[in-house]
Length: 501
Figure 1 (tube, rainbow, N blue to C red):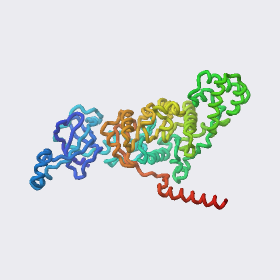
Figure 2: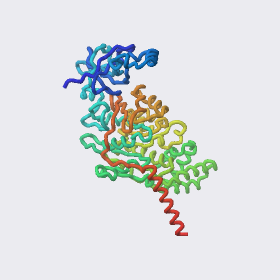
Figure 3: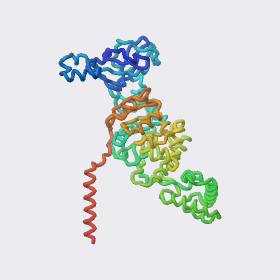
Figure 4: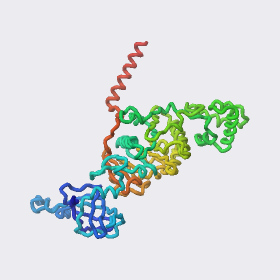
């Protein structure tokens, strides 16, 4: 089937040039911003992307003439204005396929008068580097009849980030990604999934008929950290202000505790600390810091759950932290589980996995909050070194500017939904070499459920309409309904109290 002709290249002040050209649109279906097009040239088949669309009319080029004719009468009745109205598309050239099928940089501009055609979908699939056979299907390419299916290795192994403002559909898109990972079979290559669920948005997977056998939910309040398995350096990582001398003293205390008992908790450490002849400053500091840790009600003699047996290929563990208010405790849980899993992965004791971290800016912040975040160190370590051991992370955030630049810059695939904050947009632009100024401008205009995918997963940034989920989505109550129910509960509480009195 021959490709449809959609326009003709014209001469402008800027070109045609090696990097760009413009064409008059003469397709009945029209052309849309972000659409890919092709042009046959002497070099081969040139691939380009529509970066802007504008209209022009020679009768309205002079402001003075328009103003004067407007005073005298209607310009439309005096001249055939509608016959001289044209729609023009501006394009950025991306590359050219030569006769042998190799993609090269464009080295010579297309000629004025050249025909612009709809791009062949098979050629577009090849150009973008999509994987229609085994890829993760997030939806459909906008402006084209082509499934957006991304290769597992390219999308995940060098880490990924999902960025969007609140209400733009990032949790929905994340749910689609989880479905795709859970639906893979052993021949396609399966990985284990760990989800740090800050608000309980993914617990519904455990009750869904299609996925409940592959998903387990763990309440963050039930997680325990075994003191017996911690060294003085492990404690020091949780106490940022501790000095080297205090770490040495704590190490001596732990050694003494272990000589008497291989299974112990913080109370056993306190007993030895009380017996030690330490300076008042060191003793008080250690007591204070260890008491703060004990008050979190998370330290016991042994770990729960067993981290080594936690993950299975093709299955997902959701750790919900929605009932934990203390951000430090949340960070402590993420630090503990992430560090243990990474150590086990380096010795091949757990399967390759993807750790999805919701509200990642709370666990790996940048700026002034960085030093106080207990989980920042391990997340940045995973970002830098995890790919070598098939320990992969996916950072999800609605405030990219608050996210560690070290971690975000290592996420080589980014899925970006609607963002309007100029500071966040600027931060994204600086952290990604694959995004152009014109593409960045389009992000703020995205609708709910539309996403830009760029980076390692695809050869060129693409706009995707996220597909419909196959799993149940957790829907919160409407504000007015929640307010009504809350007031009813309050009234019932007052009635019960009055009856009691």
